[in-house]
Image (spheres, rainbow, N blue to C red):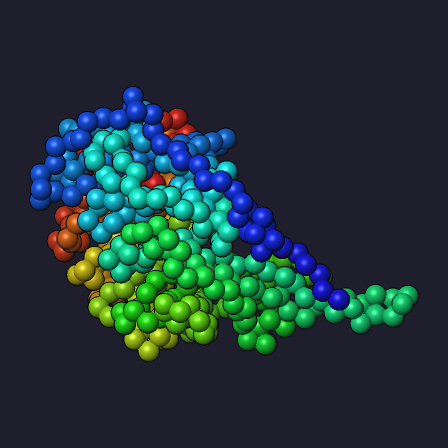
Length: 451
């Protein structure tokens, strides 16, 4: 017999009849357009308000935009929790920005509006003007979708889900039942979204299997996220999280032997012919959390892994659409720490990247382990902690989402949970760090990045 544990597809179909709801700031809170030099870029800062506990981010997301010139000015002050634009989302919004910073894309996460796609033209301050149509992707990937904007000129978004079913055979007699675990069926769904015209481009579902040996031991793909296009534009890579059950009890295990990092490779734009490739360099997951986890650089895709018992790596997938196991960039070795865990990262066109991370020496703060920033060189395979940024035991980066990039400069937010801080601008070419505008926080809240 079969035992069904997660009837997710049924839930997805059920929510397809939800009506769309529009949520935006009250007109009385809209500020006039901010003057911005034509050579300057909008920098949108996002804060996650506390729900029940400090740092949980479940009280909603607020955003506020200033020019990159003002973002570098430490005399400027940003108060998104007092006068920011409320992004439609029941919990922390999943935000993306256009490459020029002039547009913010959002898909609401959970609640009555979960799965609704909207986009906004950035006008400065709390002034974000909704443009185009609103569309729901909930019928395809549920009301809490994992989604990302592909780097194809702001044309396409991709959202994914995976549902699982533990398959068991009853080989007992009429009097004795002997349920024998066979494997866990993992069904992946992926939808691509036309960001320009607010329309569904394609949707496919696939059964995705590990090796027979891995599945017999109870391993399965339990979560997927962070699609990225290859340089040729004909393959899509999707990060994976590997879970495991005990085949004897069919109970989920928490401590188990970690497999090599894995990625699903699909044809694009058809979303057909899935296969799984595995790394022999890195172990653990490649799905990331809330920040983009894989990027295209110099013709190859560079991908962070998490939960690696040897410390997080940045892995390389080459033009052959498989892992380049000759490329080794291990954060433990590069930084001289133990159990490094990449929380978020972003490279620039020169091959230098900003990495947010924690490690075994991180202090346990009010919301979780303390975070740090490092400057990583993808070509030299080196990493250096950025000491010019102040750190605090309550500097929590687990939910960090975005870095704003302007040329070789990266804008990031620094503020402990419930405490004020600043924008910092890192010149990835020189390593110079500039202290920018002040960030005014609110009780239990935290900043989740810049776009």
